[in-house]
Length: 80
Image 1 (tube, one colour):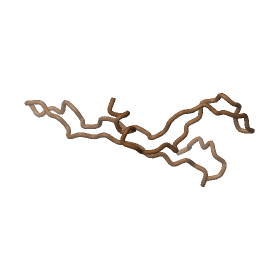
Image 2 (cartoon, one colour):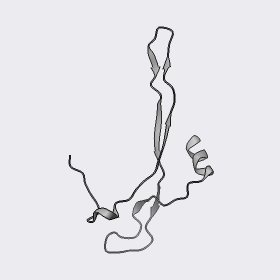
Image 3 (cartoon, one colour):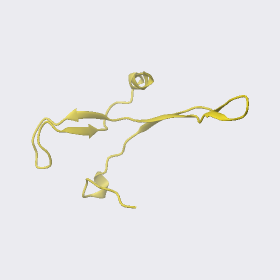
Image 4 (cartoon, one colour):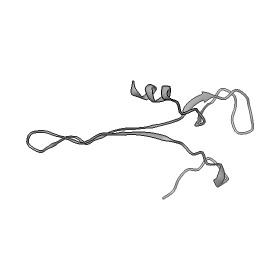
């Protein structure tokens, strides 16, 4: 299994937290499964523009950042 790795050093790979929503499966009157129960998996990340140039990327490129606070308002954001 090959993966594309953006980091040269293994200890610099980012760790991301996910919110997973599941429910009980639903069946109709004949016993056929109508709803599996999987609602979704939502990562706790946000994308932001880079502010400065560096040797890896120019300014203005969209990068993924994972260091946001895990607050109640973030869970409400996923509810909508």
